[in-house]
Length: 524
Image 1 (cartoon, helix red, strand yellow):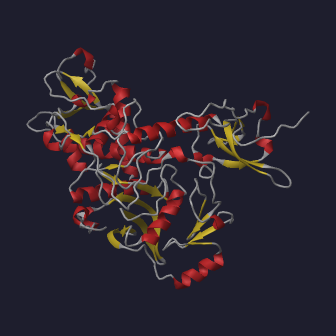
Image 2: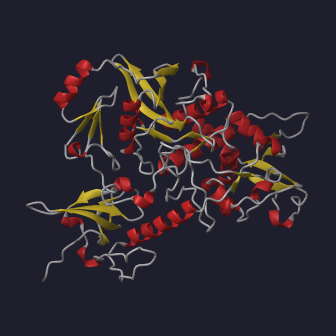
Image 3: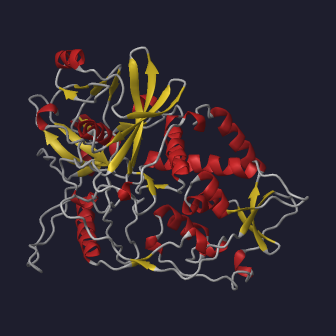
C-alpha cells in the first residue's frame, strides 16, 4: 500500500486521555510536522478543545483511516485588488472571513449610544424572599406592568457580551432591562480621536466573550489602551507553544500558549526566570550569576496592601517598563486571548505576592488602564498555575473591586475573559451578591428591599454584571405585580458551603492606597 503523507492542515482523530484517564479519539488539526531521524512528530490542535491541550504526538496515536486533507479553494479572479485565496483548513477559512468582517467594522466609525448615568435611573426596588411552596410565578408575557416605564432600546452589540447572552437566554427580548430599572432617552457619545505617536489596540477579539457586533451593526473601534488580542491575525507560529518549560523560583511551569520570548530562547529545554525581577536567562549558571547581582527581593513599586503573608504591589508601566514587559511575557504563556504590546505606559500592574524568609514570591497579578473610558477595572488577570484552585483568583478579583471602592467607581473586567477567568468572575459575583441579599433584614415587618443600583454601589460591581448574575442564578420572578428575588434553600445552602471554604479575604484596613487622577497629568 502507498503510504499517505500527513501535511499541515490535515484533520484526523487523535488518541488522548480524558479527565477520567480514559482513551478518547477527538478530531484534531495538524498544525506542524517535525521530521526526526527515527519517527516524525505532529503538533495537533484538538477541535473544540482549549489550545492549552495542544501537543506533539507520535504517528501511533493517529487514526489514518479517517484522515481529512485541507480543502483547496477554487482560485477566483482578483476583486477590489485582492487576489484569490489558496488552500487552507476550514478553521482558517472562518478566520479569513472574520478578518474581512473586522476590517469592515473598523472602517465604519459610527457614533454609538452611551449607557445612561446613574442619575438618570429610577430606583426600582427588588424584593428578596424565601420560596413559598404555595408560590406560583406567572409568565411575564401575561402581565403589562412595564408599559408605564420610559424605556429606550439599546442595540445588543453595545452591551457587554455576557449580559447580552443572558438577555437572549432568559427572555429573548431587547427590553429586558425594563425588568429592573427605567432609563430615560439615552444620548450618543463621540468617538475619541486616536492620540498621535502612541499605539493603541482596538478590541477585535473573536473569542466567544468578545464584544464585537454579531447582528450586522458595525461596532465602533476602541481607541484606549488594551491588551485584547485581534485573533484575525493569528498565524501558524503564534498558534503553537514555543516554550517547553519555565523555571520560576522553586516552581517549574509548563506554558499553555505561545509567548513572544526571543527566538534564541525558544529551543531551550528550560527557560530560567528571576522570580523577583522576572528577567529571562538561558541557563542555570546565568541565573545564579544574575542572582548575585539582583538586589530585588520583591516586585518594584509601592506595597499598598499587606495582611499576613499576602502583599500587593502597585507597579507603574511607565516607571518600571522592563519589569512590566517581562511580566507580560510570562503572563502570555497562560493567557491566550491577550496580546503583548511593549507600550506598557498606559497600564498599572498589581502583583500579589506571598512572603517568606527569602523574599516576596509572585503568586499572580492583574493590570488595569490608568484611564478607561469603558469603566474597566481589570485588563488582564492571572493566577500562576502552582497557586491555582487555592482561592487566590477570587482574592485578586476582590482586590480589584476594593480599589474601585476607594476610587468611588463601579468596574468590570475587560472582555473577552478566558474560560477560567469567566468561571472565577461568575463565582465571585454570585458569592458577593448573595452575601448582601442574605444579610438584608426586614423593616417594619415587611420584606427587605434593595435596588440594582444599591447592590452596584455597595459592591462596586457594574450594574450589567449584577443583572447577568441574577439571571444566571435564575432568582428573578414576577409575583403580585412586582419583580422579586426568590432565594431557594438549595441556593442558600450552596452559598453557605462556598463561603465556608473561602478563607482568603481582603481586609480593607490593610489597604493603603490613594487613587491618582491620571486625566490631569500631561504625561503618564
